[in-house]
Length: 332
Ligand code: AMP
Ligand code: MG
Image (cartoon, rainbow, N blue to C red; front, top):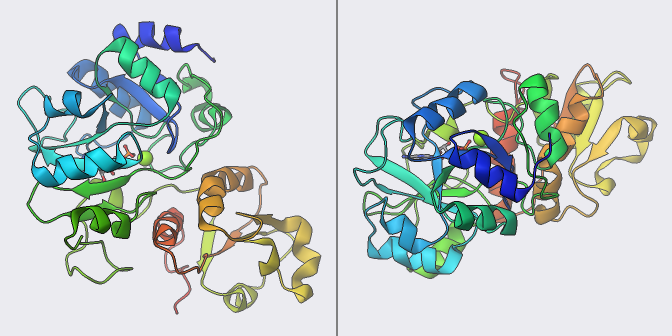
């Protein structure tokens, strides 16, 4: 059911859940400071109660009521908020343990989407809003995806069109002195380093500045997964070795990636972008995976994008974790 922003505010205020658009992906929103509502979010998503939720706020002033801010946090928030950057800080006592998975840190962000902001301001209360999908499935980037993912359990939804970025927020841990990326996203480590003027640690394996794998709960191995067996490849040559058939579907970063001799597979090919621009690939990534899942293919054979940009780290990270076949990522 599609609802208006006013209807969403009324439902949220009574402790109900609604799906809302953000600039990253659609969120399953509910009152962040109500343990009962937070439990409803975990139940509907089928999410482990130890995997904490992000709290969404209108601005820095409301954020300072929930978390212990330091100078680094204030610096990044001034530049990147409102926007797709989540920061992790020590929580204040008013934040219920249910939302932090029992831990003493809290993840917060101020979203950019005008409808989400309007709802936050009218409601006047912070909202928890993990991606509006059953746990581990592909995240929704348009309102119709939520119905497709939840079926008869679909929450009432505010339609805000396509999500601008199409990838979940960058998660930056600032709770322990040294800044550390827990999840790659639309704001890149380089952009954050430019603001803070100190090095930012990043997760393995892509940027080898840190020998500890991230402990962030969103870094579990399988995530964002389609239902169809999904295989990843570094090169077209590796796709050839997997002997694609007309029962399979190819997923390629851009139009020019389909070689002439594989032209017979053109009706069995979906592209993440036209020219391979990382922003376009990110925007289309989940949409294409959800579309591919509806084609009843035997296998999805995907080629990893290979451009040398930090946004590509986020794209490769999501594709790698969407890969639901053990050992199916072809080696370098
Ligand atoms: P999602 O709500 O699905 O976008 O995922 C939320 C992500 O935020 C999780 O996967 C974690 O990476 C991160 N997160 C939330 N709270 C914390 C926290 N207290 N400490 C570390 N990471 C967190
Ligand atoms: Mg999610």
